[in-house]
Amino acid sequence: MPVARTRCVALVGISGRVVEVEADVGRGVPGIHLIGLLDTALSEARGRVRSAVINSGFAWPDARITVSLFPAGLPKKGGHFDLAIAVAIAGAARLVHPDRIAEPFFIGELGLDGSIRPVRGVLPAVLAAAEAGARTAIVPAANAAEARLVPDITIVPASSFARLVEWLREDGAHGRSPIDAADPPEARTAETGNAQDQATGAAADAGGPGHGDGVEAAEHPAVPQPTGLWEARRPLDLADVVGQAEARHALEVCAAGGHNLWMLGPPGTGKTMLAERLPTLLPPLDRDQALEVTAIHSVAGALPPGSPLLTRAPFVAPHHTATAAAIIGGGTGLVRPGAVSLAHRGVLFLDEAPEFPATVLDSLRQPLESGVVTVARAAGAVTFPARFLLVLAANPCPCGQAGMAGGSCGCTPNIRRRYLARLSGPLLDRVDVKVTLHRFTRRELLADRRFIESSKTVAERVLLARERAARRLAGTPWRCNAEVPTSVLHRELRIPEDAMAPLQRCLDTGELSARGVDRAIRVSWTLADLAGKDRPTADETHAALTLWRGAP
Image (cartoon, rainbow, N blue to C red; front, side, top):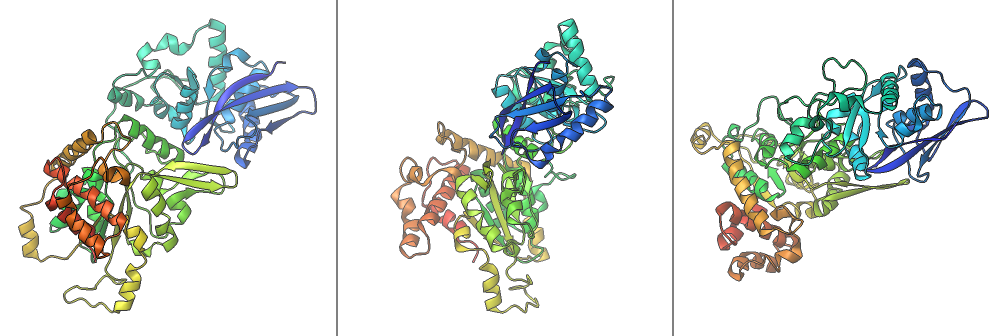
């Protein structure tokens, strides 16, 4: 019998590498042998594949079966190779014609009953297949909507191995795909065009009515705009926060320029409410950003049901007991993205920040500067994107009652100092905006109600400010003021000397570090964008300096 070949994808971070799966059914002691630098989950595929083939009604070859995954030196992890291995064996055993399985990519995990189960990372896997020139990808039916986000590739959803083999046989016998006969061309392949139309079509239900449990035709019914895991059931609105005008303004500045934020205040002053409403001020993700964010959440297995494309900025709030691996990424087997990557293009909120281990907090310093995080393991290094907006919240002392009228704080000055010192100087030096929150009287809260604005109103100003920054940064890889490197700040975007004077004085007295000066300059550009000015003036640099040193 001939050697049969098909293709799958090995995930390395959020990128995919093409893997060629070869199967040979020949003489020798009956058994199945998998080779190609496999992990434990993939080595166990021999049992899953054998049971799936037999329980699907096909005879298992009574021969020596060798399955090779090439390139041999590339580590291969996970159960999504099951389907490609089973199909390659079916081709070598002549259950299907080998030519029918040579071009498509097969991605999916097999159940013992022959069902094809959903897997993580389908979006980056199909992206890699499309980049390799594939015209067809067979994926689990539950992952089909996610896979259809990739343009110019035909997605074939399948939910059972038996029906998949039947479809491959019928296609070979009749010379054409049943999908070609059943669907119009625009439903089969996502064409390059309007991004919103592609997203809507991609969000279609993978299991249309009347298709049973087999390979299904690709249908694209109208669906509502997808939402992310971070969105609450009741829409969040900045107008819900009353009495913290300074903090609301700080949120607007951070959203407009992509700046990091530290909020210091006693319990009940609205720190968490403010942080949760920051994503509502951020602009929607563009097409490329949405695909990148969706790929990260797909690899992490965090895509919400019915929402194949994430179009809003994510909000990630890990508990203070989270480990460094949970925050940065890692794992003993398959390296998975951490909170900093799940918050890519969105907000990472650390509530009760001083309660986090010092090693976890300091591990944020590198991704805050570079926008990526590299996780090194014995098998190799994996890089994930991590361009997020950091929000830190802290009480003034361990009990949270310091400085409150009538409070019963029993913390000594030394205890308070040690508590806040858990946030290291190098970390806070990377936070552009710092604000102190206070408790207000009922009269002050009632007075502030006249000045509150909805998230929609503030988001419109943020969008205008971002558009001004985008025009100024056109032709560069940077999208907002917080991303502009130091060299550009002091050359192409150098601000007038009279505007620099307040910052230079603080630099001379040692109140500001060189990094702090750069942070304040970036904030001043954001304030100028919000005010509709071409360049920052002394007013913007004064205000930026106040925001930078706002919390004690």
